[in-house]
Length: 431
Image (cartoon, rainbow, N blue to C red):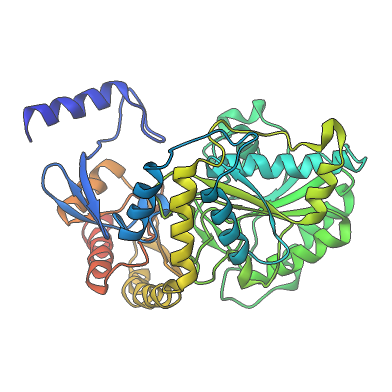
């Protein structure tokens, strides 16, 4: 390592906060020079197969020619103009593609800055909808334990209140309602009693509940758990029965990650409000969106204060981000993911499922392009990442979870390198 690079990393450690990392005892950071396809190149020369899709966003891989071209072409025109009172073709085209992909009748779109902000907007939509039709008392959210919806305050309020990463803020958060997570996992026989608690909660408190918010089928950062789609199907019926909106947080599950275009597609249901982000731009830039249908939008539009939805980010509808998102959605529309994701799922089943026989492993779970090895003991992140870099892969575990969500364009050989690294950890370190 050159002295200048060493100094740069030292400066980083002393002055730059990284996600969920201490400033007094920071986890090591690896300096990236470039990324291409499914590989990240470190400044020290190592090439790492990326198992994380940069937190599940870079579904098409890095330096994709069509996404690069969209970005460059838009930068030559304008990088940003305010979205208040102005519009532009990148936003219009992106939203047109998004509506084409989204289930009907979700055709009203708020362009947000990030996934967390899209959840904030979804919650505002739900609260403002009921306020606008004369039911301001419907101002609570109901959700299931084990969820994760983002790091901003309204989003934190519907994350797991006990085991989630935001428990220290609970006294400053709105008091929401929680029920136990779905008991029946994906692929197991359905138990009709699985919704008894949430049904009872809705029966007793629907007059105060604005919306139910869930991550469809996959609870992501809250524990990487997969639950039965029938839970969603019957939850949709309960929301209709008790007059409660249903919000689907598709930020992690959207755009093919679970093997369906959206997580809700496993259950064949349509939410009232849907959040998307992460893969929306193919991992190039921060952008998200909150979609709803005419009933919600028109009720808000006829409400107090001129009917404006009370949110307006400075960089809303950023043309650069919208242009690259439109190009990413065009790739989704081409449908190559429909063959790529099942191939990844098949290989993950073949290469990760045998690890369930290890005494160091509690459970192995695979769904679409998601592979999870839940260990019996927590992972030493710094030590494990150093090992993985030696093995030529980038995998970032948390808690007891070793998981991968690779780009869809990953080759069989690259995916084998990822699963072999996890196998090596299980057999040589965890045991």
